[in-house]
Length: 108
Image 1 (cartoon, rainbow, N blue to C red):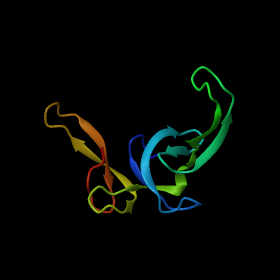
Image 2 (tube, rainbow, N blue to C red):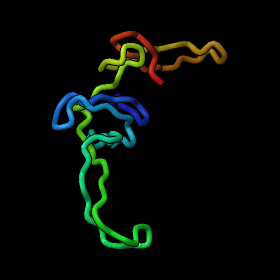
Image 3 (spheres, helix red, strand yellow):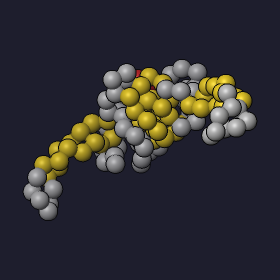
Image 4 (cartoon, helix red, strand yellow):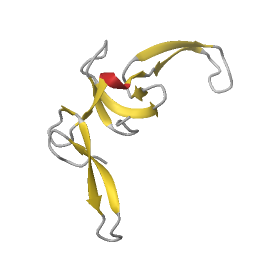
């Protein structure tokens, strides 16, 4: 899975198409991600110590990772992700970095 936590993504399919947000959690085995402000569901909760009032809580549900694309940092458009091998100047070791296919910009 090429999407990681804290990536900025845009939803490209489904009811929330066009919404953008930050990835909060990634589930690689299920191929799903939770995106901030996307796929909001309502959950009815009983009163407990954390929430003594109880009631209806809105929270984000997961979406399939195939329905989101990483946003290019330079062009602010959806992009595919590639990898590039870079030699670290200090240690001389090879590192694999993620890059945007649209602009060639390195992703964090």
